[in-house]
Length: 333
Image 1 (cartoon, one colour):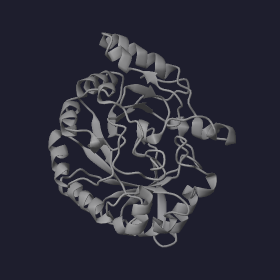
Image 2: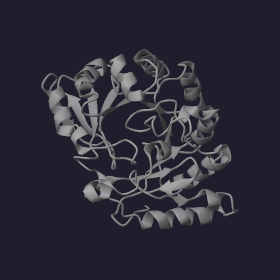
Image 3: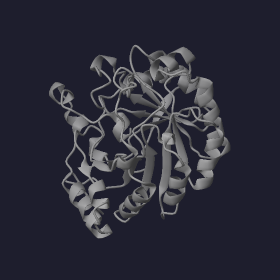
């Protein structure tokens, strides 16, 4: 198996299919930066579906067993179901997608028919005013809940619901979110506000630590820890003692999991990033468009992974926070 300098195996590939999004979440794409005059990638600069399929096929030959489509917002990419059908033909792949769930619910069934296995939906509050303050759009919570219901009907399960918790914005919504999805089979994952990129004005004071999140829920609905389901799982799992399901906690800030990170990230324009907090990517598109063989591209990936030593979250400090980092909307979450 392919391993990096810290003995971490390559297992997961996250593919950003677009850098565009219809939301302007304050922790990801604040409108004052990603406004009307922001220059997004040109269509010619974005990888084609055929190029993405080729890359994914090479990665599966290197041991990747999970592919997640991200953005931006991946459903902003036209005919995404066609790409899903192309990737679904790859053997032994867990093919998933993360979305804000603001699109017509009928799309869910096209994605399922194309071969998508599971969906993760972002939802930062059940309170409409808070949700719209964070997302900075007029989309309602009900629209997202309708999308989640459609995912359940299409059996794109288990559905994961991601809530980024930011102090001063939505920490009061932790318990209501847990209550809403207890007993449904859906898994809410509470995510610490992270210093991805430089546009979101991250401050440690706005991080609600994982331990505090667990304590808030545990006081009302007792929890107990669960083991990881597979090596490299980023969410720490907890089950409700009364058997009403489980939650996950993604605590990159207070409980770093760099030591088990098994991910590479491919940007929409074909750059490979070895860490969510990286400053620079490695140009794979140039190889794809310059006539390189699959074997040459494979060797490029092998060499990149074997040299990988990223441990940003474990080394996080005031100095590293001020370093340039790629934005989450470009690289995917």
